[in-house]
Image (cartoon, rainbow, N blue to C red):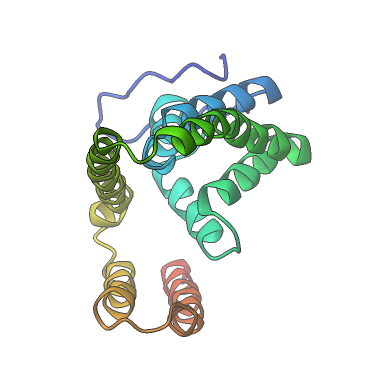
Length: 202
């Protein structure tokens, strides 16, 4: 089976398994290049669509777990995801290929746009256009957040949902420092997952 071909969807309604054959270096580079070029307002939406839905290189749960790891690492989350994902499938060379595909095309485009913006950035028409684009970017982000939450709702994982809501309330509502919240949330999450898996195994 080709790495870029998606398996047939089962009639049972269950999520199909990802393809077993990992993509080559060129396929990784091109996939992440397409994500970056399509990623107006953020690449996460298009990374989810390509990795989980189109190529089925990961299940929804695997993507969420990988993105969660990248979220707690220093640096931009999607850049971390490209390195971790590429290295997971093709080693260090795969990480470099995904990283280059993600950053090289938009870097070239943004450099050109920055030169143009320096010349015409004060135009009112351009300012209004950028304001409209920012609204679309927020909508894309909200959409992918709900898609990533779907596996939790399907399993009705009360512990995971409680932790998620707790972190959201602590940071988004009570404005607690991110570092302090993570120092509590990470060990609690790991401990809860370890305890529940041991309980299920027993």
